[in-house]
Amino acid sequence: AQSVTQPDIHITVSEGASLELRCNYSYGATPYLFWYVQSPGQGLQLLLKYFSGDTLVQGIKGFEAEFKRSQSSFNLRKPSVHWSDAAEYFCAVGAGSGGYQKVTFGTGTKLQVIP
Amino acid sequence: DTGVSQNPRHKITKRGQNVTFRCDPISEHNRLYWYRQTLGQGPEFLTYFQNEAQLEKSRLLSDRFSAERPKGSFSTLEIQRTEQGDSAMYLCASSPLASWELFFGEGSRLTVL
Image (cartoon, rainbow over all chains, first blue to last red; front, side, top):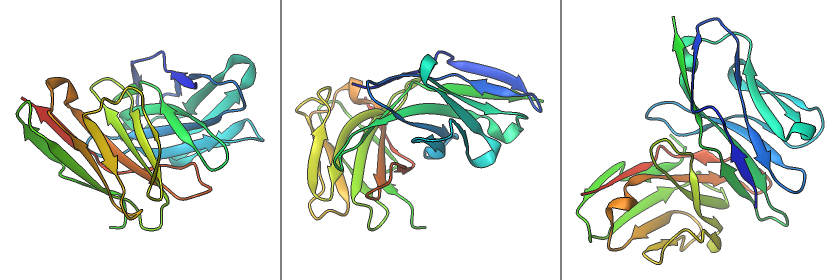
C-alpha cells in the first residue's frame, strides 16, 4: 500500500523568502504524485502533479516540485513566498490501474508567512 | 457555482444519533470519493465510487458508516450511532474518468457531543 510522509508539521518563513516543503512517499511502482493546498475554510485545491517525464513540474501560483526517485521524494518549492501562501499543504500519492484509482494524503505542513 | 457541494456544512449531534451528509459532485464526474480529516491530520480515505458502484471501502471504516450513490450522481454518507470519535471534517471529492485530479468540496464538519 502507498503512503506519504511530510516530516514538517509547521514551517514559518518571511515574506519574500524561498520555500521548500518536504515529501517522501512509499510505493512499489512508479507513483503519481500531487501537491494540494488547503486555505482556511476552503476545499483542497490541486497545485501540481507528476505522472512521468520531466522530473521538475510547474504548478499554479508559482509553485514547482521535483521528483527524485532515488530519494523517494517530491519536494515542493517556491522562490519567493507571498503572504497569501499561508495555508496547509498536503502531498499525496496515487495508485491504481484499470480505471481504479486511489489517492493517499500525507499529514500536511502548515505554512505561516511573517511580514 | 459548478463545484462540489456538500451539505450540511456543519452538524452538531448527540452521541448515539444518526447523521447523514450529502455530496453533489461536479456534473458528469464519474468518480466520487469520501475522506475524513481530523485536526492535524491529512485527509483519510473512506470510500470510492465509480458511477453508482462502490469500488472500495476503507478497512478502517466501521459498520456504522455507509455510503451510497444510487444514480451515479449525488452521494450520501450516513453514520449510525455516532460516537465522539466520529467528530471530524468529512470531505467529498469528485473526478472525471481518465483524470487523477480530485475536486474537493468545502467539507461537512461533524461535532458529536
